[in-house]
Image 1 (cartoon, rainbow, N blue to C red):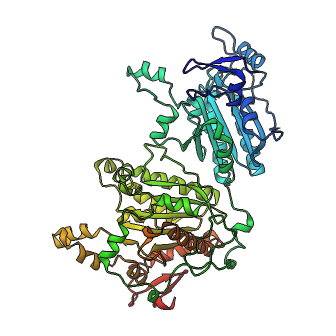
Image 2 (image 1 turned 180 degrees about the vertical axis):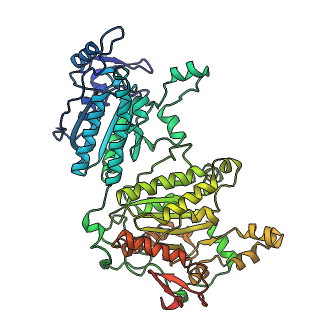
Image 3 (image 1 turned 30 degrees about the vertical axis):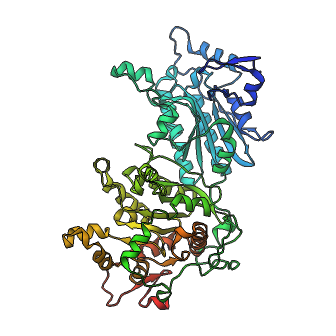
Length: 589
């Protein structure tokens, strides 16, 4: 029941009650998201008529016989009478835009949404239901922390719920948390932040210690907006801020992830991919087109790749008007949902990624984003040079892909990892090394494409893949020509000679076996016809991924180890690698 008039708690304006209800209890003037009860959450999020209760549990009642100014038993009885709830969370099985989900929605009115034995038991029951039915779990959090009146037993609920989340991780079940205001203490430090994806309403606060406790303990004045969703987003702690009006479609897209259907997963180890209708080179195909891309969109024969002046190849790869990674994602993917943050420090703008669909197949995409043609855009995205947080973000997304069984696609376009002192203090070398190790053992297909510059270890950190492609206008090198010239020639002006000596152009990389194929570009470069360049790249990625999807994890890992283990071996010939076999003649592959 909505009052006839409601006063906004942020801007103090009066809002007509029926209008307030139509805006999902969000102030139409300042955007303040008012608190909701657990039942209101379920009504707003779930499809009408789809909610079914999840099994009840019988936790301990007043296990410590606790009393402060009032006995805990009385407080519990009052909370139940005022809210009509047995505990501070309601669990239900339902659907969001036809996507099945188990929801556990917390209610702050019930003893501050505190985590006690009853809440812990219900969260675990929701997790067990999600596991048994193999559907995603959505947690809607609102809590002041662990329930003091239940002492150490309440503390143990943090470990108990974390264990339940770990079991869902091991089973490959997607978990999503919707953070609402406030979410603090033991809930924030357990199941709330252990989900694969963290979404927050605008202004929602999340933290372990509340601001009053922090200020009293440290004597420090906290900055404006501390612990809000906006602060958390800036510091890499959450994936997205989503207004209430956009929650249902956003959550539905996320819930549609998970393991591909059997028809998408292929016929099993060693199965050959089905043939797809032919698409002429350069013909633009909608991203949602059914089936796999046309075969033959990747150039694999050495004699079919044009020889190029190495320095001209460098200049083309660095052309500021070339399509960016985000341009490609927008063209070749359906339902791309960008995720943010490394969960530790920041959201590195030089690395972008998230789930999407390539030709109908769910994938996880990650790329290095230079930011566009203008200087301001490039500065905002650090010229595509990732900080350690960028590599940690990419690692987080790859681990999520492995959990959900999603193939990984990486697009590489970077001069190299960020060389600044902050990057070194943040552990740049460690972050890159961790990605190399992680990618070498991902149990899902991995396809990498160098779409511009592939600079040094900063590029390789996203290119330990089953198949490595390069655009016809791309380059890939251990160091920039300028850097090589400065070190070995002692003269930066010798960059042209260094470029030739480094053999960094597509034809030479194919001859060396460093790349497995070349993706054609429109005449005069991708920047001349970005739409056609995107269509060619999308077809090449779909074709290459289609070759790998039927492989089981063991075969993928063995072939990946063979691919990279071969490099540097003295075979007596210049050998290349393609299709899981070594070739001594690239032209015959």
